[in-house]
Image (cartoon, rainbow, N blue to C red; front, top):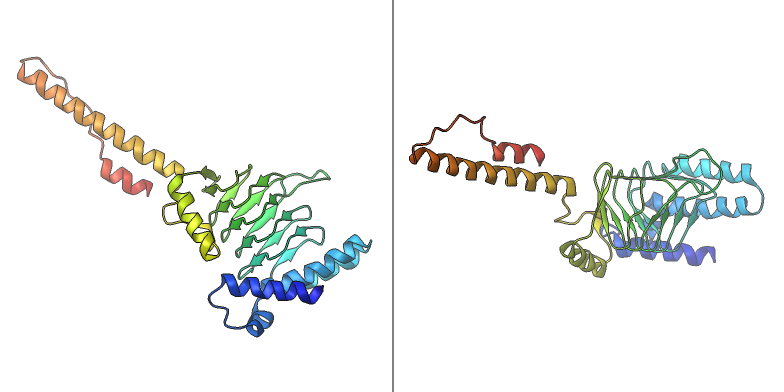
Length: 248
């Protein structure tokens, strides 16, 4: 069983990472694979009533791989931890099958209470490098968490969450891109080409709207002046180009 899971882990890496040249290279040089093997051993010790020994094995795995996985965490099949340095997975975290997690990711808790404190990732979730997913909520099947995002609430299935705090994008264009990425195997770093921060998009639209209002006001002032009406001075016009560059 252990060797079967190891073969599955190696096949998963070779399917998702074009840099993986051979099964031997993956087995010897991929810390994500090593961390999963150590975790399965630590998790088995924890379930059999050896919590201190389980934590020691987990600590040894952290020292060897740079990936910290609590023995109590539940991890499904074909999970790919790419690069992995700095990944932290908490005690009550649950990771579904076929998830991809990049370096620097934290699946953390925000409560000191006992019970469920860490997130649940359903099948096929991709968490980009440096992202923090904090709290006992669910990230739905096939969702994407953008690199360096901070997620503090549930993410619907198939959605993309980006930003600090993360905001959810569910757009047809993004879904089509993600569908193509899924057919190719995965979505690198949970970033799609058009996945702009929704706050940035909203600000751009507001700036453009105000700039259009300024243009219409100037036309009204010019019309009133031609009719002989006194027209007072207005404030400095909005520099839409400069503001849009600041928002980017």
